[in-house]
Image 1 (cartoon, rainbow, N blue to C red):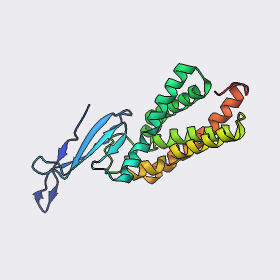
Image 2 (image 1 turned 90 degrees about the horizontal axis):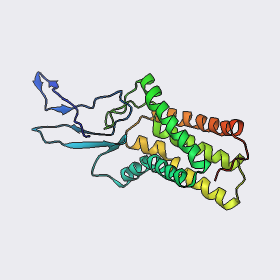
Image 3 (image 1 turned 90 degrees about the vertical axis):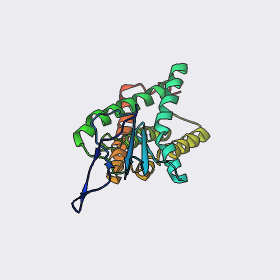
Image 4 (image 1 turned 135 degrees about the vertical axis):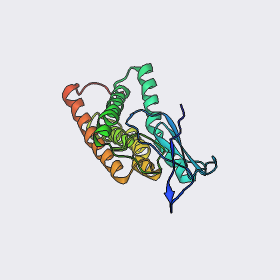
Length: 219
């Protein structure tokens, strides 16, 4: 579904300025697609910003913006990968990661963002609240848990441990940069999301050792 924010007239020096399309903040947690046009005159948009799965896309994209957009879709790609991994293999690792991501996503979108009710940056095309960044929260939770498992959890051979750690850091650590670079979140929204994510990752690691037998195979 595509929606266009409602126009409003602004008065400058007693005269109406050209129509400016405003971004409306919506408390709805799961907004799929929107379009925002700014500095619109005679019905022709100067700039368009698209939002898909809470990621702003402003064509034409620069190389760094393209990289930031790709990084912003990593959590969704990982979720799909974990889903099929668990569905086909029934292993604990993808199941536990799926639980982390889904539960924390719902908590961030339906509870924390409605509690803080803090808008995203003005240039963001995403209409939901922005505090905290759920991208940063879920990414840093999964990344922290994986790194703790590799460091103190189940035994791995040296090469797989290094490969897994580098993969986790490479895919998930840049998330706050991506969200801030696309102006979908403020710096504080990213910092708070990462902080909660790290704490949640530590909690998930502790929970697995307390509730789930240490001998349960991850893979």
